[in-house]
Amino acid sequence: MTRNFLLGAILGIAINTQAQYIISDPAFLAELQVVVPGALSGNVLDTTHASVLSLDHLDLASSGVMDLDGIRFFTGLDTLNVRNTPLSDLNGLPPQLKWLDCASTDLLALPNDLPDSLEFLDCSNIGLTSLPSTWPAGLRELLAGSNDLTVLSDLPPALEILYVNFNDIFLIVQLPSTLLVLDCQSNDLTGLPALPPGLVRLGAGVNQISVLPALPATLEELVMSYNDLTNLPALPPALRELYIPSNSVVALPTLPNGLTKLSAGSNQLSALPNMPDSLNYLYIAWNQIDSLPPLPDGLTLLGCSGNLIPELPALPAQLEELYCNQNPLTCLPALPSGLLSLVCNNTGITCLPNIPAGVTYTPSDLGFQPVICAAGDPCALEQAIRGVVFLDLNGDGVQDPTEPVMPHAVVEVVPGPIVGGADVNGAFVIPVDTGSYLVDGRMKQYHTITTSAFQVTITPGETDSSSAIGYQAIPGIHDLRSDIQAGPARPGFENLVHLSVTNAGTDTSAAVIDLSIAADQSFDSATVMPAMQNGNMITWNAVLPPNAIWSCVVTLATDAAIPLGTSITHVLEAGPLAIDTVPQDNTVSWVSEVVGSYDPNDKLSPVGFLNTLEVQNAEWI
Image 1 (cartoon, rainbow, N blue to C red):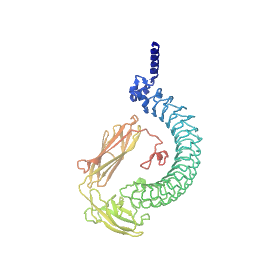
Image 2: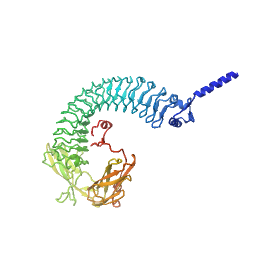
Image 3: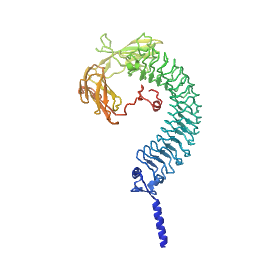
Image 4: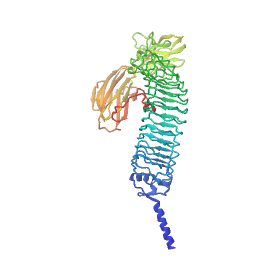
């Protein structure tokens, strides 16, 4: 019996020893002490503890972990994130692992024995020069961008998503037949292999590809920016987005009926095919196009700058952005009511056919002051309601010779309603169909309308110019409104801060304008001389009549020693506040932070919003 007891004790000690494992990496130990504290005694892990066996998710990102020795005991683990750590090997991974992110580590290579259960792998930016020769059979998504790969072969057989952008790849031997998404942008490719039959997205911009293989019928998005293409193959019927800027394409094939976005700037195009009704985005700037086909009704953006176009077709009612600068244009068609952005400088255009309500176009974008074409001008609309808005000083509903015009008012026409804006001279033009209309001004804050609505009947090709709409100001209203916009603050460089104060009231205001700039920046100069500067407080004095706008551009400097991420807050205030009807909008703040130092490759875009693909494809910069 003694011998049996001793044997049992020895076996128990052996089993207990096997259940204990020393975690040697201090950073790994620190993370485990958070997620499985009950399984640890000092640096010893109880590998049979329930919390070890049941843990299914472990996030070690940015943790400093260098060695995962012991990770194999977490047999229930299916998700492991070691992104941005100094980890140098992946030996002994749990057998049931499905999701692994090891991007931005010190691995340099991947093992050939990754878990068979693995479905997702992100190994971006780890210095890979080659990929494993064997793969988990079920791997569906592989992200291997920003490495040093040169050749792609022996890819996972069931792969559906592959990102290998920003490598040095010059050859892709073969693609898995299961592939749905391929992103191989920014490599050294001169061609592509046969494409999988179910491919949905292909991104191969910034290469040297001169010819594309046949495109699968399932393809929905094609990105081929910055290549050497001269022609395109037949486009598949499923295609929704086509991006081919900065190639040498001389002609486009027939466009699919469902296409929504076409970007073909900086090519050798001289003409365009018919546009599908589904198109909402058309960018064909910097070609040799001399005419445009009829534009789709749903188009919201048209970029046709730098072409040979002498005349634009009718603009769609949904159009919001029009960029037609550097063309031999002399006139514009009627502008849609929702057109927010218009750039037509460096053309022969000198006036606008109409101005949409509530929109302010700048002289720098237009190349001229934003004025409406006078009646009789060759560019004036042939069929429209035309008139003037004036300030009715005596309130009698009649424009006297001494009563001034009222710029930027909004006029409404019913039925519709159809609205239009007045220019700086108080003139308005509203394009309409034939029929009878009532014309009136829209209510304006602190004003009353003194004229009755005008009854107007328009026949084909007729313009009615009888409408004169009067407003009378409610006296004694003081209402200053401040606005501030600033460029990025960079260590060692200057940035611009744009200030404006608008007198929205009805009385002239003697404004005191104070700008408090961030403590980590210093004042350099201003386009309007300050009345006073005291440290980081700058003051201007301005007399603003009703509707006047005071503006100033301030140049600030940021010391090179200021850390990135330092908070930047500027405060603009226009007073006196005590007599202001709405003092809440007299003060406005600009809050940002110090960002990276100047890069000569930094670009500015003329459009207010860019999606991810537009940034990648450098469409506007």
